[in-house]
Picture (cartoon, rainbow, N blue to C red):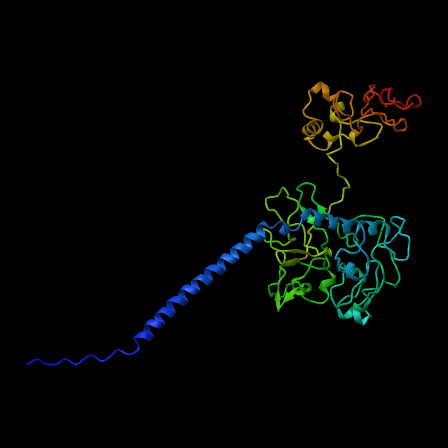
Length: 419
């Protein structure tokens, strides 16, 4: 007997399952395309920014020139000029002073940083300043009071747009020494080249090491007084969202902390930093969508006791420079300063010379070559110079066509031996 088979019941939801599977597959494909497209867009943007002609990094030479301008001349005493941390330390002020109501044309007629008792002034006492001589940073740092380099007392935020009116005391003292008044002057060990005292670092501030929470930490990194005792920006004063976004000076290989960067290598086994970052109020530059404030870390050394090897010395007289005239740096005995005098002079004077030529009476040059400091043509008759550079009877020879040596009384002329 043939039995009839009953049909199987239909499977419900099959179409829905297929639909969901396809939707999921399409979602994965779409997500993959989205991620890939975003990565390609980012790559294209970064590539465009890297090759864009208008997106070059800030010009370091231009920034250095701007700093030198502010180090040579004052920038003013109001508004944005008050953001300059080296205000009052420019060369013009240190030589002539910067009295807003004066001519400022007499050099070195000041007395330097003056003592001013501020112990009874509540505003100064509130920020821990009891004596003007403690202050080295004359910039305006926000809502706090600020001091002027050469005017007594201080100003507040409401006076940033007006010139100081208190008594003027010139800081252009008749000396240059690496002290608090000349804070920009660094000190270098002549034997090793090591910088013993960096520029713009005040001993009143204390240790540059980052605080660690120990009782011996330098409190000036965080207290109200400290911002007036240092030219370098403090991390405590540069916080965003409660996080300090400006670093402390790094440690040297030997563990000491002397600055942020090294400008001058020394001859010791362990190198060290010798410059601290300074905000000189330079114009903000924009690069890759960000505003950047240029900072400078200079090391400034005086030229006292130094010889400029670019211009000093002569090939005549075995480079001893035993001159009695003193007309210029070519008469210095460079060989008395350095054992490298022969190579320096020979390289500077169009190459190496034989021994005979080193005693030839020519001013810093060889025959048939341009003779410094004369350019092509003749010198003026009123510019005659005796070119004798050593104690011999043979005067220096001028280039052809130059006026003769000036006539001097007997015994004082270049033709007399020993003069």
